[in-house]
Amino acid sequence: MNKFLKYALVGVLTMFAIVAAGCGGSKDDGKVDMNKPVIVGVNPGPHAIIMDNVKKIAEKKGLKIEVKEFSDFVTPNSALASGEIWANCFQHEPFLKATMKKEPSFKLAKAFNTALFPINIYSKKLKPGDTIPDGAKIGIPNDPTNGGRAILLLAANNLIKVKNPKDVTTSVKDITENPHHFEIIELEAAAIPRSLDDLTCAAINTTYAISAGLDPAKDPILRETKDSLYVNIVAVQEKDLNDPRLKIFQEAYQSKENAEFIEKKFPGSVYLGWDNK
Image (cartoon, rainbow, N blue to C red; front, side, top):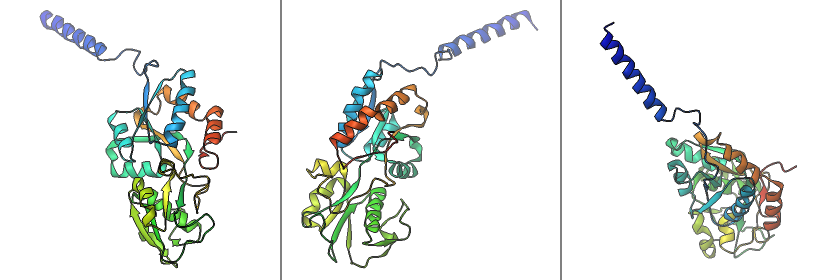
């Protein structure tokens, strides 16, 4: 090989090695800054209240958390997918799966279980123990997962029949028998509490029920039980599933200290979604 070409080739290879090293090829790759706070998205109400407690527990374990509230069920996943937040804590797994089916580019994943916030049936016209009358106007959320959840709650109480009482994709079209001739009215979840005056009763998520001044422990005329399929989760981007901060976050959320806080703060209305033995 020509001596000039040989030296030129060595120079080019050396330059590539320097560039590669400067592009993050060091042994420190993958490390995270434990001093930098992580941002966790929540909905107002129980999720936010519990997360404020988790924040205190996590800080004692060396993890700083900033809590960011979102007023709807759509934005928190968009914010997570875009990197605006590091994790969110507001949804159950069927809702996340429905979101991923609609938005496959999001690349989000379940990290761990949190708590079950039941969807219950409330009414301004009926009292607990009253029978829902024939022809009742029943409001349910218009998003596929929570709407199906409300329908399954009615089926579990033998008020209607559906194709499969264990199918989380159930919708209004899957109702096979409606002997009481209920009128099922689909509404935006956040707006249902404001529509109670115009309805016989309605299925309302715990988050929105508490925000509307309803007591999930005392006011429902029908209750979702703790064996529900809709336990809430923490979601992160798929690439962050091995983030060491996630382990600390999970330990803080699923700690005995936080379990006792939840059971004291929301007696009979929010259930633990993990084994706390």
